[in-house]
Length: 201
Ligand SMILES: N[C@@H](CCC(=O)N[C@@H](CS)C(=O)NCC(=O)O)C(=O)O
Image (cartoon, rainbow, N blue to C red; front, side):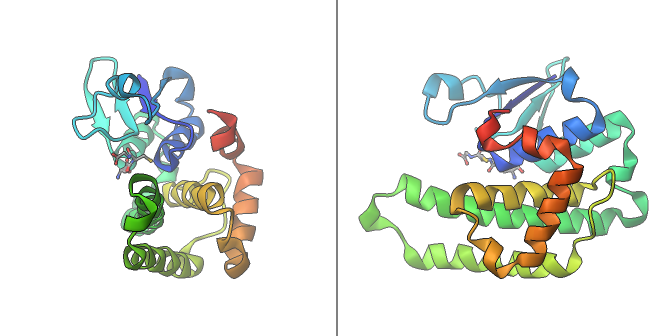
């Protein structure tokens, strides 16, 4: 299998952590996509030019990080990552964590792709409210880290890691419980450190 991703991608990080936890990481070749290099971008078979994308050995593609993670969980048989008894709850918490990441990513893109004079501060504020609303909600819904983390926990860790990476960890002052939660996650899940944007995983 080939995973098209890039070190800073929070969605790619989620998939890499899931691959490590499910024991499938060694079956995956990682193809680094450089968003600033058109030749590199052309390598990605995604029809919508997004990463991460997983290409199977038979050429089929799987897009969207949540779908890729579900595939890896299914293929590995590690169903405790997405327990039947709480499947919808787990996917909902994962969706809120993904929503935090999406809003944060839109804020990064707003500054990256517009000249300073055209940056829409109302839009930035709107996205920031989604980040804060998501963090508020997830604070009261996330569970302590298990020995095998569940998909929502992996998703949240990738999301908080992205806020650390792109927003200098500003969230930590207001969300101390989540900061503690992330410390525990980091201690229990070695692939968190291994997939840090700085580790070029
Ligand atoms: N819902 C998608 C989001 C993927 C996504 O937005 N990836 C970003 C990089 S982290 C991307 O490909 N951005 C390029 C673009 O939107 O053109 C997923 O979970 O995989």
